Length: 263
Length: 222
Image 1 (cartoon, chains in turn red, cyan):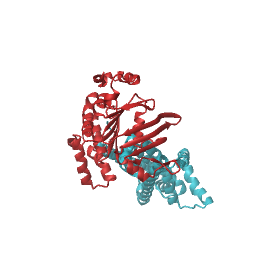
Image 2 (cartoon, rainbow over the protein chains, first blue to last red):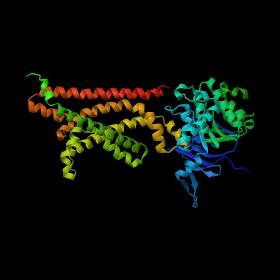
Image 3 (cartoon, rainbow over the protein chains, first blue to last red):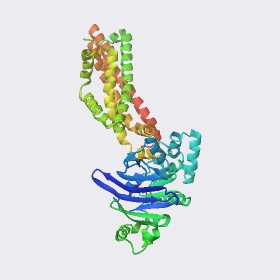
Image 4 (cartoon, rainbow over the protein chains, first blue to last red):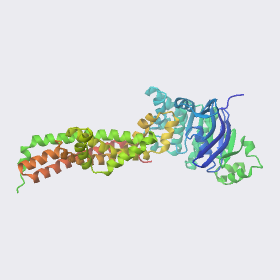
């Protein structure tokens, strides 16, 4: 059996007194696309942020390629925080793409992509920029290398953000509603880049409202509702009729957003 | 009483020296204040939460009391607790700490103005806290903190006149002395106002030039 890229066991996330994720068990197979779908407030973004260690899970374990992320269980069975250096190392296998792109506005597209190569990987400037340009070429934006984020369209900004994450050669890419902040006619270019990545065999976890994308690209779909994974499986299985009533209700609201093909 | 500009000309060397002391104290105090203020703001935001409360209290006291009284307390009250400082070091220390309190608030606002996602993106890519502050947050907030910083610099220059009460040989001390000595109070006060205003204008112009240069990044507008 091959090692899963990410394995989540009994994860619980609380903000103060409210529990936003409960008893989450999830296996992300390597080389596949897994989509997390569900209504707003279902906890899918929080789950993804836990995988990126932007949120610390309140309970439970996450392992990335067999290594504990953030916390481990010591010999007495207690949950203990890992040293920062180790958290960084495990985390470096993961690339994250945000809904709001989060490009740094004072750097050009090239500067954004090259930054971590220079500061984290300590690559010389010329080499960092060469590698950054290669990544921008990959997302079709080599001719925008010298542009500042404010001079790029939303779709272009998100493609730069994807290139920035890819530059560090992560083994896993996390996408948090990557097209939700985009005009409908700009979502295509971003989804195409993601499709290409999937074809190359990148392990991807995608939180998305793009049901069409989930149905055609993902190998695994998990449906979240009220902080729990209601059910998971291959798209053919999940979307096959008769569907779970909660999913049916959810799909109804997205009929105009590419889900019509499924009905 | 006649307005006699010759008084000014006769005392040119002292006036120049007083201006030099004011400029030196102002610029050094401001730079130290910026550095200290940035450290305070950074510690309050990213340091231990135990630091935030005492630092916040110090900032509040410094902002809540007149500079005149602060400097009086340090200079005349200091010796009672074993801190005896000469006028110039005492003045510089007082001005720097006073400036730091206000600059720390400017940087606090600067930190708040940078979207948290920009921090998270850098964190995900493995940048350390210090790298994030230096490479991402500071340059991003530069344009935001510049106008209030120039504004504060101008206020500090004028506040530096307060140092005359602890006999720092700066501009106000020097020119007032000339006024008393020559019975030419009007000339002295008029000249003082003119020199301060001249320096303020120069500083404001410098600030605008810096702002124009920074905004060539053109990242301000979305």
